[in-house]
Image (cartoon, rainbow, N blue to C red; front, side, top):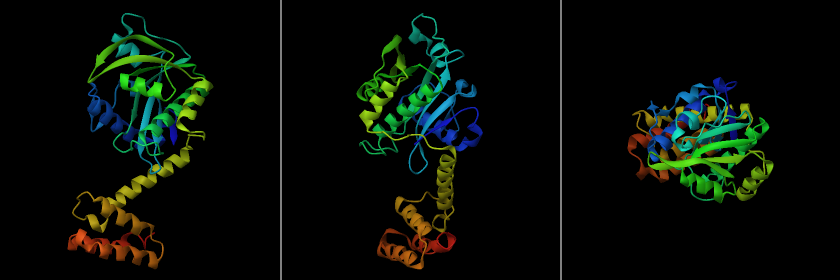
Length: 288
């Protein structure tokens, strides 16, 4: 599910934008080893203060799993001012109908390697479709994007191959960097859709996105403050599962079914954890 955050609605999505910056820190500062500025776990640069547009992918639980940034090329942008070595002495690209796409990233830790909706492949293609459709709707004809050779291969495999390249490939952190050109035509968008089998509208309404993200944040806070977590240690996967089951229980029969499962797995927990989980209905199920 894709949302677009820009200077007009960014105040509504501060939590989502912060999570996107955290994902960028893990990808560009960690996995790729680029020389980027990271503060408080977030990767933010000077171009993020120019009111760019962000195309952001969310999973069904409201987590940010993919993102890309779009900047006008008529003003400051990365290829002109940071990756200028790629241009190899050529003047920067300046065009009212060309955007620069940078910071394309996908959460490879949260997503799996299959082909389903929670896969890296699906999230990557959905983000490509979303960014191309958003650009096209804004009257943009072409995109220039700074990528590494791995992303170049991803574009080609997804039937989204660049139609040309700019300048030369240069070292950038742990990987080389190059600049590719993509048109925003309906033909290109349809090729990616056919490759991924994504034929529905990928965009999520703003209200729905806010509700989804806020529900995720509320669930996380509830888990952290639950009776099963009084020692403030991170909940185990099994503990989180039982807390969620208690929160979802709507009848006494459903509560008792969860309690029986806790009893059956009593050897898994310490006596304190077991008692805390048994008491969870008071905190969650009844309140719900």
